Image 1 (cartoon, helix red, strand yellow):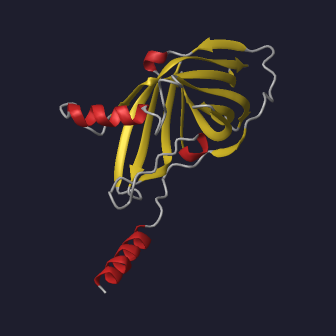
Image 2: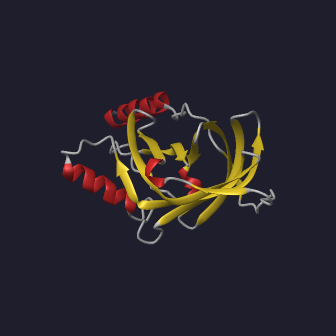
Length: 209
């Protein structure tokens, strides 16, 4: 009888927790596509990796615990046509991944978490040291607003994603979430052990020229 009560309580808690819904819009995901836009008569510009940032957010236990961190760009460039964004390609250094929600003085906890993120459960940075994003199409919606499509490669998986980017002076900024399972970042954790990791990852990206 006690076991039945415990199961009912656990089921009720699980149902009440529900699925976490991020505040940031989800990127539209499709299969990999080829380049759709001509880059003839465009000017190329290298990005400034030192002033470009990728901040990531992930949650555990249906959104009740927040994890945050950052990753550095290795290199990248954009194409402009008539001073408007027309294309680009970016390489991210996965080994640079860091966490920002664990205090620096908690060295063991930081090391354990980073080692796990860099292991095969997540990004396997030893085998896949870089991730890439290559723009396949750009639709300018206003002077500073762009609809971006591009091939995102993480691990050995490439899929085409769509999202909105905003130009702010010499910066381009974008924020979106993606379903990590679609890129074989498949570690789930456990609800019973309070280690359940939600599927959505939020990226806040700022690219500096």
